[in-house]
Image 1 (spheres, rainbow, N blue to C red):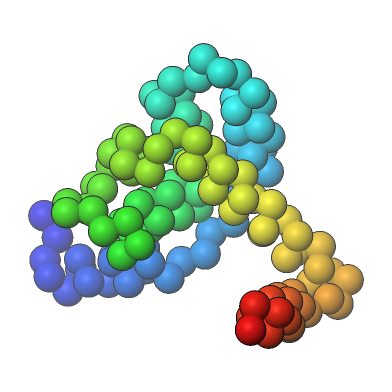
Image 2: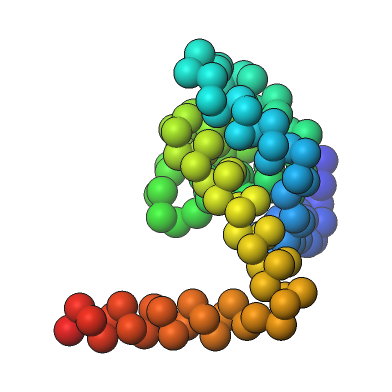
Length: 127
């Protein structure tokens, strides 16, 4: 068992770490998502091969947005709680966002500034 300080450090790391999704896993995920007969077990098995993706799925499942009474302590529980389609979507989204940010950085494009401007325009357009 972990003592309180170790658990706090682990929780802090878990909630702040940004580990990129492996491209190979993303490609397999795309292929797997094309199969309408995919099972939760198969999806979880693939996600478990990528620690960055697994930590993000758990982080989303345990976020305040979903307000679960009990934390999803396993990837299986997180996938079941979030729903199969949602997990497939966010998993691909994480990979896409990481890839686009990498490309943008290499080209000198400021993605933070870009999205801040888009968000500001969207809010102004609604008013």
